[in-house]
Amino acid sequence: MHNIKRRYVQLITAVIYNCNLKGFVSGRIYKGESKGVCVPGLNCYSCPGAVAACPLGSLQGALRDSSFKLVWYVLGTLLLFGIMLGRAVCGFLCPFGFLQELIYKIPVKKIKKNRVTRVLSYVKYGVLAVFVIIIPITLKVPGFCKYICPAGTLEAGIPLVIKDEHLRGMIGALFSWKVALLCLCLFTCMFCFRAFCRFICPLGAFYSFFNPVAFFGISVDKNKCTGCNACISKCLLDVSKVADHECVHCGACMKVCPEQAIKYSFNVKD
Image (cartoon, rainbow, N blue to C red; front, side, top):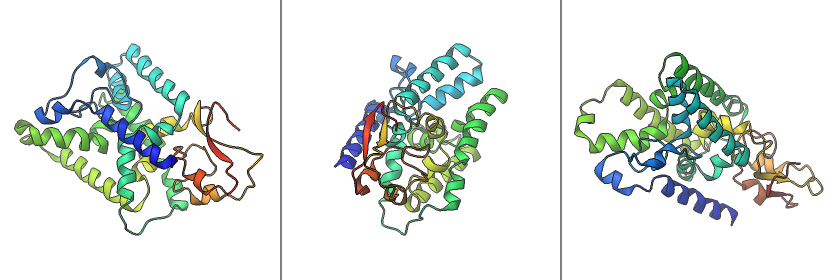
C-alpha cells in the first residue's frame, strides 16, 4: 500500500512541477514569478510546462555568473531540502526518477546489483564536482545541463525542437549527443533499477550527504531488528544499510522486513 501512495505522490509532483499545460501547446517557456523558486527534484527550467526552476540549473547559472547572492540563495534552498528530506526527494519528488521506475517495470531480464554497480554508484559524486561546480566556475558553462542532463533533453530539448521550426534548423552534434545519451539512459533503466539516479545524478549525490541527518526518512527499530539483512538483500539500490547515502527512502524494505522493524519517521535517527 505504501508503494501505491508513493506512486501518487510522484505523479502529483510531476504534474505540479509542469502544470503550465498551455506551454506544451505553444512551445513557449513560462517566465512567471514562480520561476524564481526552485523545486526539490530534477525538472528542467526550460520545459514548456515548468512553473519553477531546477535547483541544479539554478546553481550552475549562479556559479557561472559569479552571483554570490544568488549562489547562497540556491545553495540555501538545496540545504533546506536536504536537511528536511535527504534522498527522499529522489524517491518521492523527482519526475525523472518516477519515469525510470516505470521503465524498469518493462518485463526484461534485470541486472542485479553487484560489485560493479556499487563502484559505479560513486560516479555521480564526480559528476557533481566536475559538471555542476568546476565547469560552471572555470569555463562559465552550465556543464551538466549543457552536456549531460537527460531530463532536460526529454522535458525541454525535444518538445521545443518539435514546436519550433527555427530550433529544428539549428540541431547539431551537441543535441544529437544528448538525445543519444537520453536514449541510452532510458534503455539502461529497463535492465538496471534507476540507473541514472544511481550512477550519474549529481542532485542525488548532493542530497545523499544529508540522509544521516534528514528530518524525514526511513529508520530501523533496533529493538525489533534481528540482523537478518532481508532489507539489504532485497533492495534494488546499492545500499549497505537502511537509510545510508544510496537509500532513496522508497520503502520497499518495509515490505520484506519479517519483524516490521522498518518505518518512516520524523527526526528519528537510530
